[in-house]
Length: 142
Image (cartoon, rainbow, N blue to C red; front, top):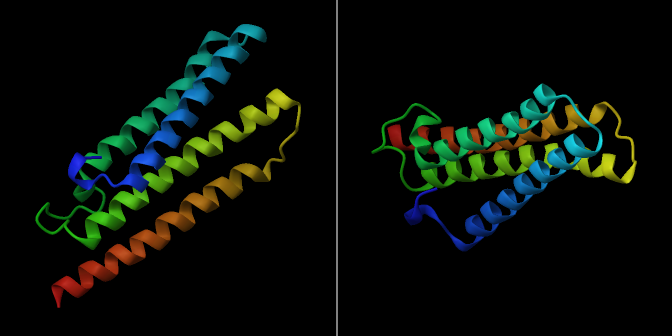
């Protein structure tokens, strides 16, 4: 996220998200060492997080790419909603990966429906903010 777009709340959310990502990577390293997980699976688990995290962070620098609109049009509420969408999706994704790792560490089994709940939560956040963005774009074109 660019410095001009950064607010205190977004900085706190970014810091929390970075800490969650580091905790996930730390737990994956712990599992890899303690349970002798295969190298490919170990690297793949960390790589998924890193690639999605980097992609969403890149989109936060260029939020106009999210909706394929011109940079001149991506101002005000459209930019604000785009950045919130990306921040919350990144937070839900990272937390969604971390929760099963923490539960595994405590020996708690998670049902298979957990994945569907996380996907649903990401879709709800996306649908809400995309609806708001489309309303703003529609009002600008009138």
